[in-house]
Image 1 (cartoon, helix red, strand yellow):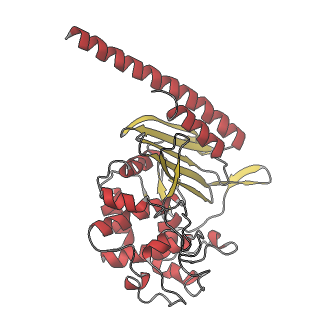
Image 2 (spheres, one colour; image 1 turned 120 degrees about the vertical axis):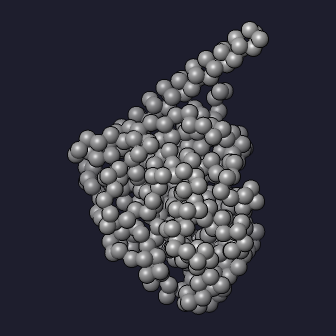
Length: 354
């Protein structure tokens, strides 16, 4: 018994020491990254086997007021990571037999203008339907619209190609999917996201980025202009929330990411659907499932991820199911280059023995 206690104490001490070493390395790396990229504020959270092993805020949510970033409370725009959140809502409807990924979009939105070709929910969600993305400066639209009204921006545009023939990224496709969810669930899209995704996963700080509301914990949104960091233009993201309009914290996103490792809200089967690459007509894989990118680590283990970019946001959600690690990174600056930073984070948290 005494030997067991000694071994347990040694194990706990060793684990704590290793975690402290990793935190020290990751903190130094992040501070350098922020300085190089001139980032006002950053929030990062890392979990392993469902438990947070590092969560820290760097810099400021508001430069003028000197409000520091909190990984628990500071709400950032997450931009296109919103697609992954919405994908879980689609999976929930599949589990409840209210939706089928392979059915025509017109079954759920019959009044959407008819195109030359029919196309499925899976094709829209996998960016192979041919629905266009933003034109010009459409991403800067600052007009408050409902998700249905938002369809007016692109609904009369022709498909770019025959569905299934190519991969073409489209946030507007996810705008259409939010209407699919609303109609299939017979419930307001935002209410469905709250009751079926955010509440069950305890994502208490995740919500739509409503331009008409004041969020005391919401960060300012910065852009680089002529070498200076300034507050970006005002935009309204409610109408395209499903594809790029939610606010969240790095800690909330880690709670979400763990759903892809050990599902609680959805099933293993539906998670597999989300994380299986789509295949184009001629047999090429797209390396994108339903609302999430699919790749491998340098150890050849699966890696699921989604980035986000927009006015005052550069974000990344990384999920490593075999290692049971989730990393969430949120910044309040547009145009941040994260590739090298992420690679070094993986070297710390994935490839060192711990």
